[in-house]
Length: 231
Ligand SMILES: Nc1ncnc2c1ncn2[C@@H]1O[C@H](COP(=O)(O)OP(=O)(O)OP(=O)(O)O)[C@@H](O)[C@H]1O
Image (cartoon, rainbow, N blue to C red; front, side, top):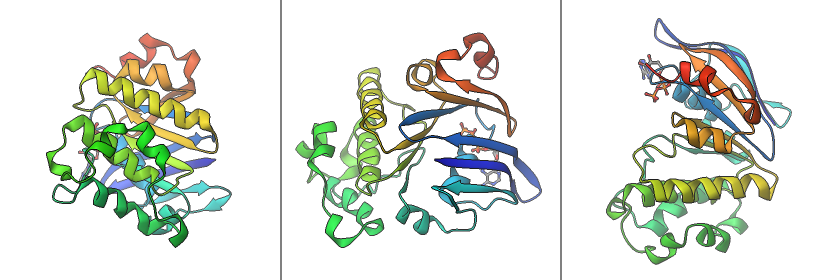
C-alpha cells in the first residue's frame, strides 16, 4: 500500500500541494481527478521521487521512501507512465522496452509474453522507431515499458490524453486487467470523468493543491466531482 501523509510541495515560493493525503491500496485503482494546474502531476512526481516535498511523508510497503531518489523507488517496484508518454523517438519499440530493464534483476531482463498479449501492436512494431508510432500506440508502449519493471505500484499520468476512443477502451481494459490480476496498486491521474468513474475503486479530487473530495469509486457523485473539473 502507498500512503501519502500531509505533503507540501513548492516550486520556489509557489506552493503546488498543501497537506495532501492519499492512499493507494493493492489490487485497486485509485484515481486522482482535478482540472488543469491543480497539482495532479506534482503529486505523482512527488510519489515517484522526481520532485522533493517540503513537509509530510510518503510510505510504500511499510517503508518511508520520502527521501529516496527515483531509481531507488523504481527498484522497489514503483513505475511511472508520465504525461506526454516520453517515448524515446529514435529508439525502436524493443529498445524503448529495454530501457525498463535497469530497475530489475538480471534474470528478469526480458519482456514477458503477457505484455505482448496485452498490447499485440507492440509485437508487430517491435523494430519500428518509437517516434513513428501513433499517439495511442506510444501510450501503450509507455505502459508496457513501465510493466517491464514488474511494478507493484503503477503510476499513470493522464493515459487518455490526446488518444482516440477505441484505444482509450483498450487502455481501460488493460488497466482493469492489471488491477484484477492482483499484487498491484494502480494510481492514475485523469481529467476525463467517464474513464475515471468506470475504473476507480477509490478517488481523490484535487483543487488548488488541496484534496477537496475523496471516497469510494462506486459512491462518486458526478455533480460533486464535475464541479471541480469544469473551469
Ligand atoms: N516546474 C515548475 N515550475 C514552476 N511551477 C510549476 C512547475 N510545474 C508545475 N508548476 C505549477 O504548479 C501548479 C500545479 O501544476 P501541475 O502540473 O502539478 O498540475 P496538474 O493538475 O497536473 O495540471 P495539468 O493537468 O495541466 O498537467 C501549476 O500552477 C503549475 O503552473
